[in-house]
Length: 128
Image (tube, rainbow, N blue to C red; front, side, top):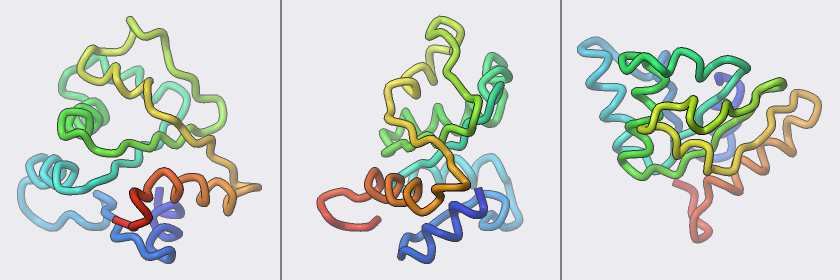
């Protein structure tokens, strides 16, 4: 996540990374508000990362749900070995995540991967 954040910042994007950007105060409120304020939401999905999302209090579920509810431009980054579970195995409030074009993570072809992420983040030729 930090590597992707750094590369996006170098390419001129204003990037929010929760572990670096959130200050003191109520973490949950600040995190969800930041997701709502941003145009884009990148979620990194590793094998098994959606397993805990069956719990309504799971943070990944809450973040994805917020991004979907606020109609963010979502870009899933799919780590090696990740595959979406069957649709009926994903809670309804985040099931829409399956419909977004994902970008396969590649350390070897990192620049090409970042080019694709940037392509998905650009709207009408503007970086946001």
